[in-house]
Image 1 (cartoon, one colour):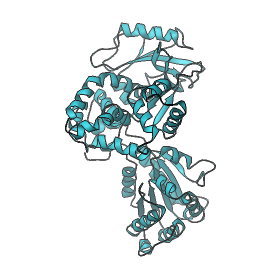
Image 2 (tube, one colour):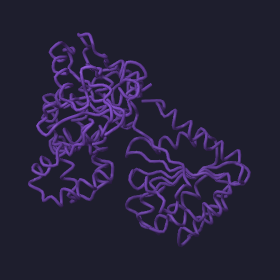
Image 3 (spheres, one colour):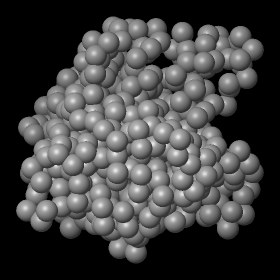
Image 4 (spheres, rainbow, N blue to C red):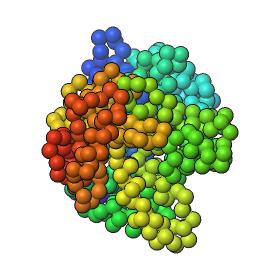
Length: 473
């Protein structure tokens, strides 16, 4: 698939930062740093490559490795710098600095003084893990040297929690870098990239998670099973490999968190059921695993949204692609590898409608929150769901002034994502009953109906796939 889809906002932000470097600033410190984070495989490196290519500025692009050490990191940096188009790249040839302090001294000598340049430190969390002093060394050189030169430093990382902590008060690089989050491609980007109508674009988004590498191998105009039929015949497909690599990078193979994540990916959501499905995990082990998963932003802990506090926290896989992979591919890789992907595909076909109905709900909530007209009422500051221990009621959409404990409920909604059945009078009756059971809602609280096949009743705010997709544009 040709072309570079999406990322206009991120490219514009990077171009703005480079202009500030070029303008020099009022303090005589033109140098700038960006702390760029995003989930694995969302295209951070590709975004940076596109930016530096179009900027025309001399640049150094260095990518750290998970298998390296502090010494090999420094040597690999020197080799990348020697091969770069920085004016002083020749200063690195034949050099073997013993640490990052010496390597950064060489970098300072190689940067141009009369025009902007770009230095990319990709997979920066590996550098910090291999050398705990790396942050302090970078901070020292940024304050003393790099901030005084027209250079843009891009620090890129996939460990979301670590990249967030870099700007904490007690860290060396506090307030020295501008934070940038690179999200997956949006449902609208998926629709444009694959030339799909809205309903099929949301299907593709739920499977791919908006990962560019997956979408690049998706047949243009093809439905979800047009693609999955190819995937189950190819163990090296991006859809399969991306999930494996994400997990391998986040957790050691024997980590308790892998077991808990698999249980959540299989559909268990409450703490009690997760522990039971995990073989009766001790409470302490379960708590540690859930804490690790939530800290790494792999799993989200979600509370019911209403005017009353609740202890009924649920856990869900944060990334749509990984959610699909854990449900359908990860547990059955051996089938695909031995040529029996037909069994995996049959399982997908059987469970697809029910899985999709639940998986689309967080996407619908985010879409409603983004909609300018016809979505949630004005004054809404949070959109979530509501449930009790017995799931009576279990409400798909709750809009409120704030969350997770609201002062005012602004709307209550239901999501029906079936192929050929619109939201009808029976669904409306169920929504009215649920509204009466929601703390903070009453008969004046507006109703929202979201349906893949349309809404066949009056008295509700209606939204379909086209409306939801437009919210992402």
